[in-house]
Amino acid sequence: MTDRTQARQTSARAADAEEAAEATEMVVAMVAADAVDVTGTTDAAGLRRARFGVLPERIRPQDTVETSPATLPDPARDRYHADEWLVRYCG
Image (cartoon, rainbow, N blue to C red; front, side, top):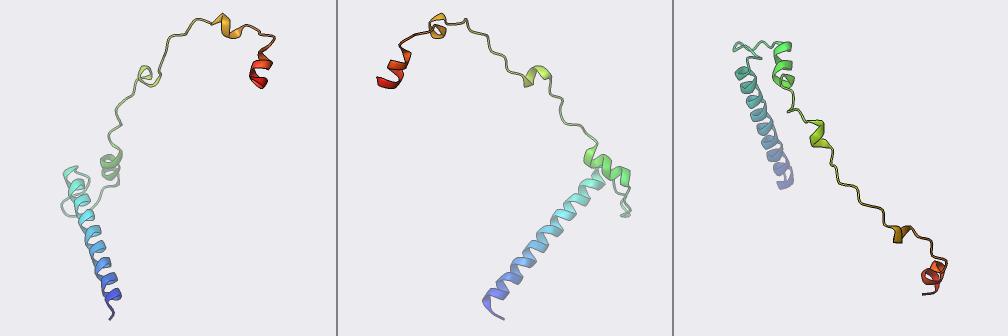
């Protein structure tokens, strides 16, 4: 067996161990939430309740809209200037 093959197998074993640890943590959380009996039988409604039972915090519409005061119109900006093209293109 080469070093590369051995490294891959070690890496795969470590990943399997991590997945097993995550699964164990999930089962412990379900037991704590009464979604799974201690005997190991699962209750579909309990699993759903454990995962989706709490709604996220409500966000008020006032918190989602930003308002800013309107400014007065600037008459100098909107005024027509006959020689503007000279300034824009020749200046």
